[in-house]
Length: 142
Length: 107
Image (tube, rainbow over all chains, first blue to last red; front, side):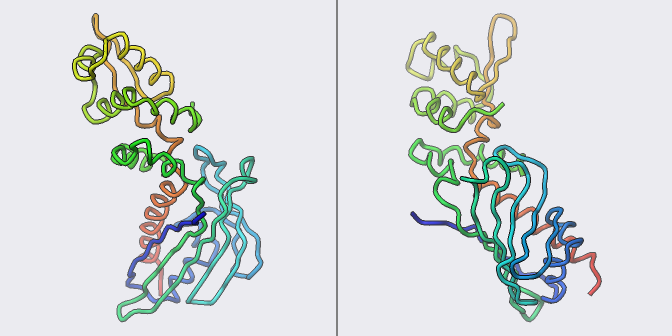
């Protein structure tokens, strides 16, 4: 079974040190991501808390896996709550690479399994054609 | 209310029913009569499929005079949208918020 990833990358006109603060200072992290009790210490267990959505109570169980200041940050990102046992088991990794104009920021959320993706399972039902409608749904959910 | 993914797949597993849903999703609101003329099956059969789709939360109906108008309810597909779709949209939005924050932050 192949695990799959989401990767989002962007060049930002800010130095790595500044982006690092936004990624690792709990109060700043809350401003753009979610309420949290994060600390940049390997082994630290923490939660992100958000509004519940379908299939999810809004709580994410995390554990810091890697901290390389201004370069790399990685944590487990697992479903919490009732469905935690067979829920999401992923790893989020941030990589900061200095560029001439700022920083290349890369986020990878890895470890998605086929069963995490009902839309994917349904591919043989002709779902490809429904992508437009589904994107609308996703936009409203997110 | 959310129908379980299995039930939704079963509902849309029928090719005629899926074709009716897709026609509504693409073409907007239509009557049973309009759907029947294009589907190649009888009107009672179309009505029965619409009933099943409605039960699954995939279509909504609206009575106007003597006619019932049906339209697709894309929200009914929500249980089929997996974690990757949700997180793809989630992270794209959060990247935008991060950039807003960075623009407001001091060096």
